[in-house]
Image 1 (tube, helix red, strand yellow):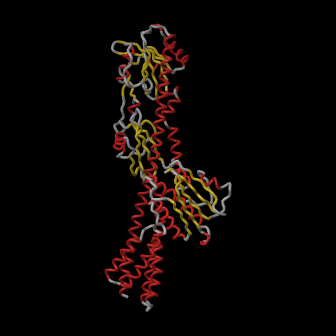
Image 2 (image 1 turned 90 degrees about the horizontal axis):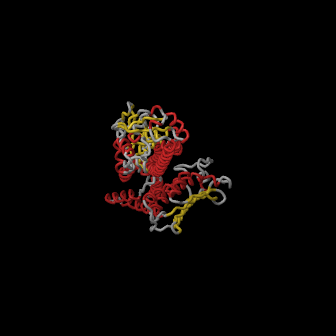
Image 3 (image 1 turned 120 degrees about the vertical axis):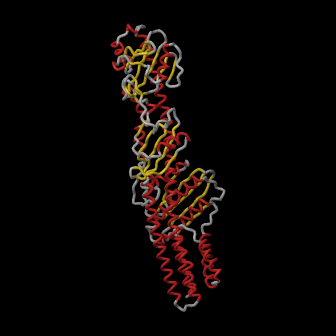
Length: 567
């Protein structure tokens, strides 16, 4: 009796504590894994955004140069149709000429003292505007042109006798973007300025606004709440206004936000935007904004502008998956505690009987095996725990108990030997399959013909585990619909050259020929219950490594999912 009581104290209490600790560790490791998966997805998504924006910005630059070249051609044609002296040109003549040349308006500038003034224009709002109040490089470029010099300012676009400023807002119309061009080759006493207003360069404005791209991305990635284009050099520094000809304007390069909306404010945003831009590295962090748990990421884009893309994604996607995993863990834990309690009750009851030593050992082993199976269902290695108990009992010199624990340790080793695979990633996958097979009473057959010299980096190992365990989980879900004696799941892996092949087969329901190829289609709905990442995401992960995923019939009823990836 004392021996039994001592055993309960030294075994049940540690195992109970271990189960509780395992639950806590599992919760936080699962949370970290989900967070890492999300960060990896955001990082991958950010890389795609960087490529898109850098390509798009090149397109915008090219479109702006085409506008500048068109304005230069319009200025040369205008010069050929206008008299060489300003006092011989009328505003009405410029209005008719701008329509003929296909530009929004034409303005003529002439030097007046230390200023350069717009004295003729087809647009009344442009007349009598002083350029002395323009940004320094604009006024400098005007003087160089009128002095018949090549424009040397770095901003804008310069050609012989011509300069076009960057797309910006105008003091004559601060609400709309304009593209101005200026030409003077000395044959006239004025400088010719044809230009486009925003409504006359819709293709350029559409490219530069990115709104179509933002809407498309938010449809493709529903977890994205907000996309913002930040000016890393101006955000958080207040509004930058310039007074030109008695009107306040905000120059486009000085705006805090280039495009998109910025409603999800956080105190650390300004600092992290600047850090991402300076380090040229994506920065992500978790925050609570307006009562919502979100993940914010800042992606620097290499362009002529100090552009940083802000992405706000919904953390609830991670939390919902974490809650689902926690519910499963609690269910498994409850079953484990019940089995542990049953084991203790049986042990106490048996201790009151004057049974033979052999009979007591048999009952003890039966209950130990049941407990071992339940604990192993949690995907934890209890072999080390059993060895520790055995060593502790040895110190107490309980000879009979030592025999029991020796037998139990031997059984644990035998079970672990079933899945001895030298490659750590593939070993982890098969251990996952074996654990599920034991818990769900499924016959599992595996053939891993891969040696330990297979080299996989950390990211590829993680993705391989995600792909394989998702397919194995789906296979278990399908074969569980059959009677126990018919349940079968097969797992196989092998290499051929630079390719790794992986196959998961299961018995299940009969799948029609017309339905089989549709299983991998996005959004396709069947009676099959697929958990985890989903087959569409599995397909995307396989394609990430230039691989292929396909599905075939298995035996008379069931399915085989196979994939191959480059290694």
